Image (cartoon, rainbow, N blue to C red):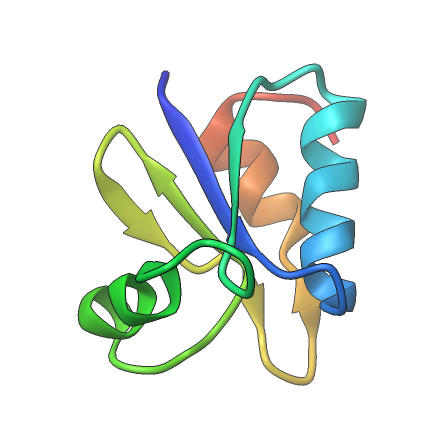
Length: 84
């Protein structure tokens, strides 16, 4: 599985998403939208807004959180095939 996480250092949901991946030993590449030229524009082009965190799993964009609810632990565990 190829997993890229679009995030920013100030983003609480991003930190939670990365903690989840690390806890489950899921390797990922991180792209900080604040420090990577064009990254924020790429997020907007693919999801219609500047919303992070975003996972790109084998080329498919997935929003691993829901506004007001935070990181979707159960849904991401199912999607990534790990135990919660």
